[in-house]
Length: 295
Ligand SMILES: [Zn+2]
Ligand SMILES: [Zn+2]
Image (tube, rainbow, N blue to C red; front, side, top):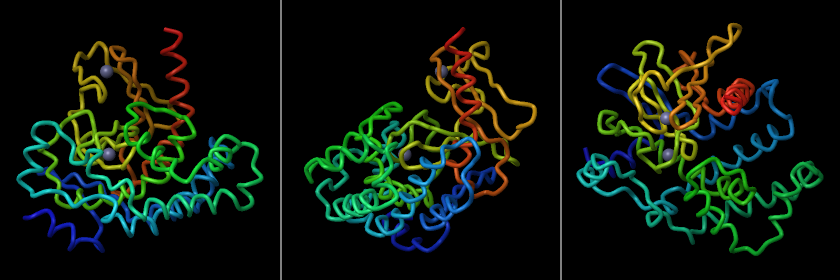
């Protein structure tokens, strides 16, 4: 099927990923994803940080409604497959219309949000709020920085850039998922935007390992016994840690490239919200990082 047609027709359906062994992980619509934040913050999260995330994600559905004018439609299916087979993600920087009005609208939406109480009074947001006084063209630079960033970079410019571009990437990824053939891609980076995984799942029936992209949240399957970052398969350098009272969460680690990846075992629904599972596993992530550092 021509992917362009698929994109046009599936807007109101849940986007589902399947492989021959019936792995399914859905990406909820952005409005559904935003509503997941309406529950109480996980106990390990600073309530201020959580309230910022909640407010920001509630701006995403409106932004994402205009994703097509920010991201050019994907090429023909044949061209896509050729790129994917060569390990090239679907999106590169040239396919994003950095000057597009919806990007600027999202920037203004965020400005209004952060300049209104209670956020404008929060000292904890100091660096972020000071950034907002910079010139109006800066948001494009930040969004580009976010798109290019290879690793976990916590500079506030990148954080803000992510809040601007992420809803468009998410909406695009969700459209791609509907027609995506998982067997075309077994790589360590995201087939949609080239981002690195930030969370993983083991599917409860198939036992597939599913990685979630840290930028666009796209899910893709990878071999189970392989490092998700350096692709090494030597069992002596791979391992995982978990806590007896929390068997749903574990942290995979690789001593060859010194990385960790939080994994949620058997997600309860086939439409999980990776960000929440990621936040819940933060204490265990920190414990494993400390252990690696001391080793
Ligand atoms: Zn991605
Ligand atoms: Zn590794």
